[in-house]
Each structure stands twice: as C-alpha cells, then as structure tokens.
Length: 272
Image (cartoon, rainbow, N blue to C red; front, side, top):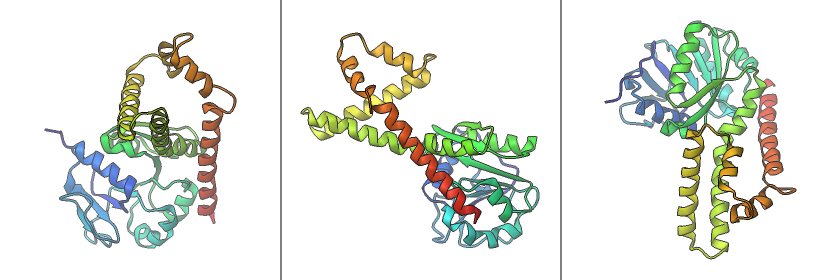
C-alpha cells in the first residue's frame, strides 16, 4: 500500500484542467491524503473520486497551499476571490505559463512564498519534469514544495526566472513535439509500406524503449547515438539526413525559440 503523502494543511487547487488534473492524478497515486484537497472549479465536477469539489471558496478553512491552475487569461477573474483569504503562511504555487512572480506579487501581496512551477503531462505517471523558481523561499516552504513536486517526477529549481520560459518549452511543450515526432516516424514507415496501425505500434514501442534506455544509461544521448549507428549502416544513412543542413538540430532550435518567445509574450501581457 502506498504511504500517505502528508501536507501541513489544506491544499486548494484553483482550477483543475488538463495539467492540474494530471498533477492531481500523480499525487493521488503517490498517496496524497484526499481529505486535504479541495478543488475549486466552475463546473463543480469532481476530478477524482473522494475529492471535495466546490464552485466557490471554502468558508471554513485557510489553505496551507494553493495551486493556481486556471488559464493565464483567467487569472484576474479569480484573484478578487482568492487573494483576500490567504495568509502570510500560505504557499502559493502557480503553473500559469508566462505569468511572472512580479505579476503574481501584484495580485497576491499577503503570502510570503510564491513559487512558479512548470510541469508536463507525464506527471500523471510520476514521470514528469517540473521546473521550479521562487524568490526568498524559506527552508520549510522550499522543502514542502520539493517534496510535493518530486512525487511527480524530476523536480529542479532554476537559478533565474527567465529560465522558466525555457523549461516551459523544453519540458512543458516538448511532449507535444515528441508526439508529433512519433506521428511523423509512423507516417514515414507507412510511406515505405507498413500498415498504419503497425507502423504506429512500432514507433511507440521504439520511442518508449529508447527513452527508458537513455534514462537508465550513464552515457549521453550523443554517445548512445554512436552505439546504434555503425559506419556505413542503415542508421548512419538516416542520420545523414537528420544531421544535414536544415535538419533536426536547427529545426528544434527554431521550435524551442518559438515556444520560449510565446511564453515571454504571455509574460508581457500579464504585466499590463
């Protein structure tokens, strides 16, 4: 039986869409005490069995932790209701892409601890990647946030806030980029004659196995490439295309730059 993941007090999730819902699933699988959680969402629909779900804030408690999981554009709709009831000891965690700490501080002046967290959807399986950033986070709140987030996968603090935009693109957005790669890999197999469903099965199994090997290996991804690609072989022929002019590396640089740039545009909008 999974040991309970205990928190210092009530934990409110303000909004529970795809990402917050995936995080909640991961926490529940890790043994988080359901009685400590309250989800506040307009639908009032519980995201999981046994989770108290309300359409307005509880009137009988002050949260120890609050996670902001609404869309960034909806932030100012919830601030007037949430901000007044928080205490200095409340730890506020934001998963809102592009909303900087300064913008959060303007809206939530009372809590001492504000943390930005950038997760990705594999948190649902405990295989996520979560970037963290906070200014003047005390030892106890820092430990609480680390303990909570590390149950979802790899959680690491970044040294400067602009790097959160990079984590958002590298970890948060990249699962979609990888899914697109898997789809393209399968399509390439179809173009060479495989039935589509079979090509998709091979593509998925290959990416799953290669990812597991890379995660377990002491060698870097570039070293692992050389273990697969023998001189003059089929792999090397394919790599010559991927590594050629306009190939995978410049494509990924442009992809990442576009995602990072959009995050910074969202930050600019939140400053207004």
